[in-house]
Length: 331
Image (cartoon, rainbow, N blue to C red; front, side, top):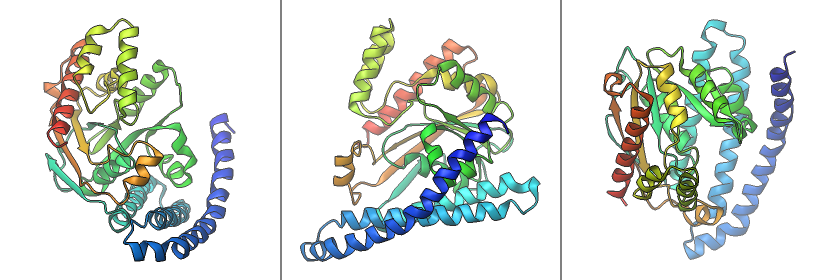
């Protein structure tokens, strides 16, 4: 057995039993939270935060168990359609979690811009590169859910390696094109992996990438600007200082995707509403959600994307300034 398969098998032998054990523990924890904090929240008209969080954890783990069971059943179907069934399972899992977040957390989503119905993809004969802002818990789940369920696309996602510890996502994403990026991975390895991931994309395929490399926080913005100055890029640093709501985009991954898929249209996604939840304390205080999650996206046709790498990098930064401006108008 190849080393990668050995590591995958070993990881799943640990994470799947852990999921099975953790689920009844979470159910017990939810019952305790309901009994101990429910009456107080009811009397004082509180936020029900312990009940909401523990209840959503139970729903999440239950969805994981069902998803794993169905993914095993999928192995006995026609092999040629395993990828399609895996996308369907992933879409169903994310749709369930997003629906559950509405009553549990008060999630409200409002999307504007060029979102098409599922029957009319952005361009029927081209793949897509979807470049999204990263800010707040669950924004990547919401985006992939919309792409699969509402737009009818097959997203290929660049994810952090830590998400492999989620057993259901680990299995489902392992059956569709994806790219897990190890922490502190060398840039050339990441760009090579992204290039390979998009090289065979066709119609209705979409690469999802977060050029900022992580969730936005003010501290990360300051550190990114300091890094640019320290590495002799004062013009980029000055340009980034004019951005208030986004991190300066890391261009290497996007340029690798553009080079490997020159015929792809590019979609930019801006959103706000989850920005303030950047720590355990702010996450706790932000439940239930008081703000509507607002998102907008716009498409750039492949023929309107600059051809040279240096021009593409400047173009990406200009688009990211547009993301920042859109957010500023809704803050």
